[in-house]
Amino acid sequence: MRLDPGKKELRVIKRNSHVKGKDVLEIGCGSGRLSFPASKGAKSYTGIDTDRKAIAEAARRANGINNLAFRYGTGNRLSFDDRSFDIVFLFMTLHEIPLPKQSKTLSEIHRVLRPNGKLILVEPLPYGEVQSLYDIFNSALRHMNHPKAVLHARKAISDAVRKKMFRRMKRVRYDIDWHFSDVGELFRLFCKEYSVPRNDHRINRFLKHAKLLIPGKFDKKSLIVFDEMQLSILKKI
Image (cartoon, rainbow, N blue to C red; front, side):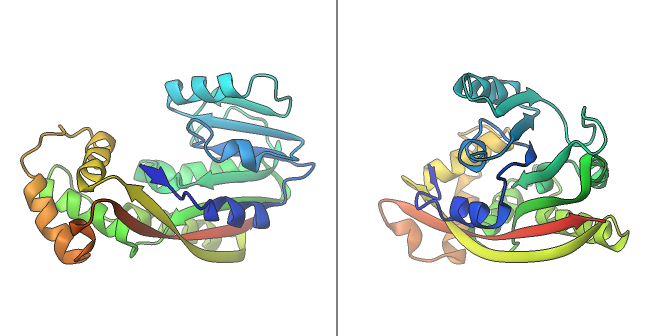
């Protein structure tokens, strides 16, 4: 699978983040897919994640880069002093955080940001092809009650704005492509993410509904689907 091979997302992030000379925290950095290019010019850039294997890989790659560090950590309990950062990044992370902990994570971000510091989020919009396929997958397997996680994340952000923790500054919409060798690779990715056996027989139910959603695409040798994204910039109040 290749995510955003044209690097459109990175261009949008760099054009709107302005990290030069800033202390930056990224929550949910994984193995640093966006951390390494986004950190260029920052005074310091710290990435945290709950995946110890991914953090170890990112730390290995960052060896010798003075302004870049990775460590284990959770967004709802940040191990940093108050007013430690100028910018906090959440790239495709907030909707992955358990629902009861999303508001706590935003409160912790507010705590560690300096006055007028910025929270920069990237979240999927709920009506792109990828998010629709996620919904079909969960409906077909019936292995979890799957309300739209992205909608919950958007509500958590709106609540934080309503509580006057943050003020909205800017929103940028764009789309990115996901390239798969075939639909089987897409299904295996979903299975891995939700800890479902790859040989689950309910793949046929998933395929039936997926073909109705985006007819024609599944008949080709490779599969390209798009995700609609939104970058939001919020300023600490």
